[in-house]
Amino acid sequence: MRMNRQIMLITYADSLGRNLRELDGVLAEHFTGAVGGVHLLPFFPSSADRGFAPTRYDQVDSALGTWEDVDALGERYYLMFDFMINHLSRQSEPYRDMVLRGKASPYWSLFLHYAEFWPGGEPSAAQLEQVYKRKPRAPYLEQRMQDGSTEKLWCTFSEEQVDLDVQAPVTQAFIRDTIRALAARRMSVLRLDAFAYAVKKVNTNCFFVEPEIWDLLSQVQRTADEFGVVLLPEIHEHYTIQLKLAGRGYWVYDFALPMLVLYTLYTADAKPLKNWLSLCPERQFTTLDTHDGIGVVDVKDLLTDEQAEQTRELLYQKGANVSRVYSSEKYNNLDVYQINCTYYSALGDNDDAYLLARAIQFFAPGIPQVYYVGMLAGANDLPLVEETRQGRDINRHRYTAEEVAREVRRPVVQKLRNLMRFRNECEAFEGPLRQQPAADHQLALTRAHNGTEARLLADCTTYRFTVETRKAGEDWQPVTL
Image (cartoon, rainbow, N blue to C red; front, side, top):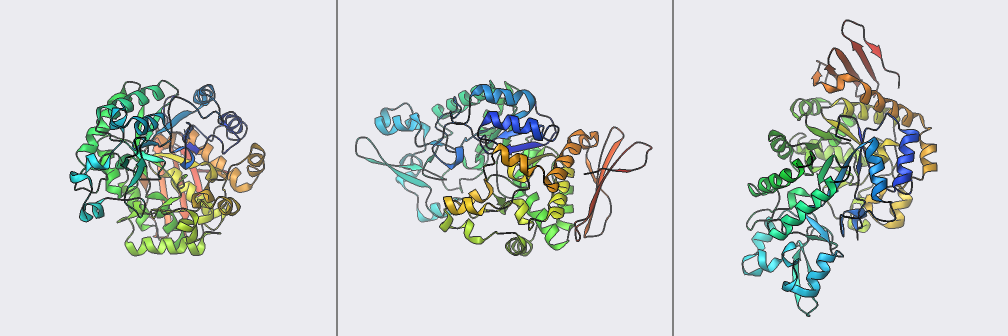
């Protein structure tokens, strides 16, 4: 199924039921009409990071199902797959062969070697300081080779995720072959995970390095175009990068929206949100929550530094069962760019505030993505995070099919599901967003297309809102949630 503008669910294959087959059943039983697409988080064999350290892309993890199960989902929903263009697992066959055979391996150049990247084999203190890092350490691992030597390899994320040399011919062939193989399945959208880190260049911050990053994106686009696949580069950083990508016709993420909506609902000041809604591109996927938590860097200069810090502080004050410690080394998370919390708990497990947040997202330009925990208005999973000592697990509860059946009986979940169905069915959302004059604590958002209109009127102080629709020449009618 080709991409459309209906709401896309983000989920692991084993988080709404035990596997792909149960996921398919859960969606059919409880969310018909509410979900149009599925971002299926990595379902390949992997050695770490809940699938984001793939060992290969030609197989489905046997614990999750088969390609036939993936194809069955693709008959009913447009699908997004992940391609970790920046790295490959340390347990992959190419990596093992490289360790075994050294420079005689055909995969030697697949990976980025420190000694071959840096003049003299090592960066200076100034060069290392310049590199944009995700962890508070130098971005490399030391690998003991079969011949007894030690090799430093670039490693941006965990030591199970070894960076690729995307400028090497062997890597470019690997990228082309992988995309073609995935596109041969029922993939409509290809998400390029950690894309901005993929190009490295001496004496730069090694993050979104121009113009080389555009060359890489063009190469990937040419392969995707062979199959009509849409590309979605995943980048967490300043919003102007998203505007650059959108200016060249690419789909982008709206990672600024989560913090802007929190600020709005915490302070009843909608001015920064209204400003962003007037600037943001149409060809975007909107988010409030993802598997990584709530991003904070994307909102810089859309909120002032003081407003951003205020939002963080209010999240810890107003949120339910959220603590700074879950985003710390104590809980094996040194990523300073995200806060570990579900969006429902970030709003204090308040049903009204949460439903308003989703209504804002659904009226914003672009295609809404709803994370599976968010679709069930899930609260922070403290038992899981204490069991695993992984901060991100606070937002990664695995629901059984029986749990889902219980959760969908909650009024907040039923209302959200109704709102999702309305968003998918109403033709007005094919058209652009218009903002009507409103007080700073209020929102008046309208979408219109082919004579059909939908509008959201909201008070960000009380969290009261109405959703209405009308045909040309008719009166506004309330939408019952």
